[in-house]
Image 1 (tube, rainbow over the protein chains, first blue to last red):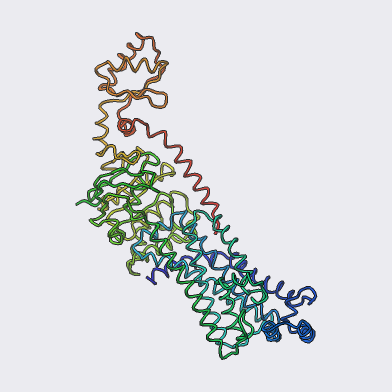
Image 2 (cartoon, rainbow over the protein chains, first blue to last red; image 1 turned 60 degrees about the horizontal axis):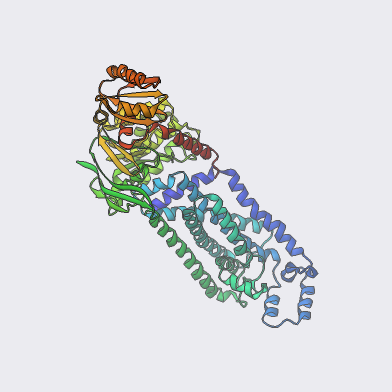
Length: 298
Length: 331
């Protein structure tokens, strides 16, 4: 079954490598985010509501004075003072990677719709292979492409000065997490692609779901900064756990997206939680997609 | 041996559209069997059920002795499927398309290479095997599609409208290839709305309309069943003429089709003068007349009351639009 899935994935890889424009654009967009937005946010003055200034290292003294003057109740004050050591870029890049990986995998359903419209899917369905292998093959490609993009953005982040606090192990963990949740978003998109008749509908749905997922994920700012109703949404958002997993893996405990500060030693339970949520998410959509494949035969 | 066995096959889409209504037929090993019918008659639905793409609402369908709903994998191993819409991958080369197909059918590397060369040679695409399919003409794509259907040496090849939208010379060469394959022992099941295709290619034909099989037989048997020659006649008083001619003993059936009267007669050459005399007597002017030996279209009119020719335009138009969309395709 894995063998057949690989053959299907191989075809997608051939398509991908023959589309240079696609490769360039899929890397350029997150870089623009990272450089334009990340740097600007770091420089933003405090009076402007500047999140960058709160987290940013450069204005440390001023910020600390400011926080003290606010007389914030615990634990918010604690969280803020714990985050003072890193720049906004450090905070932001793991978020950009997570969002990039999500975007790279969530458009995977497009190829399914094309295959459906042009009859290629029928050809796969007529072949003596398990239905799950078709689903797996499609999502496997989403995973490879998205993780590749994530790794490229990760390297570029280092080039422009972002730091990793957890060493090679942290980077390896981050890559494993990228693989896991890109599989999940890929499966989600593939299931959508199977259900929908045309790509316009898929575009519409993706645009509708990605913006809130993206904004309420902790990619831009710590979740505690959000209004409480939005926090509720954020906790139900798979991307939140993806952002958190990457940030925790790359920065260590204190700077992750939500929850009280952790020391390096107890990153593990936090990552376990992310792992559990993301695995459940991925498994759900993989089985959901396979089910649709089976049902589409009636 | 019966390669395809269908009993009371019924398919209802969404609980309301009756696509197939208790269809029964058999295909013998080694024959070329054709489904002839207009758009929406149920041809594609039948082929999709036999190829395990959709399941029937009721009834039995067996391919190579295996039930398509109970043993779909056994069926899949033994069939080749050439869909109506060309579905080879534009962004791969011909060889890559075939390689993927061979891998999905679990062919060994050695077998794969040998068979791919063999089928490329057979359909005349060997020289172009390393070109991307998007540079291929419609005829070449169709040939590649057939090559793919044959690659894993199926016992039976299903083709849905194998020559739709092709130029006459491509059609001829595909017919030749299908005949050659059949000589080599491959059973062929095809659907078509082209009468010449059914006539020249098929050993036996089933005429299907509105989900029902109207007649089954060899092209000659079916044509004989029309009962004589066919006259197509244009006049200024069709109804009056119909009334009077119906009383004459040598006249078979009279059907108005596309503003013409289609009349079956025992002996056309002798019937024409008598019909003219009769028309003159009742004051009807005959503007034109043509005489022909019965065609499958006449058979179609006999069993369904409609001409198959009327359907053609729509289908070709649809196909052109499809190809246009395909060219606009972006990834």
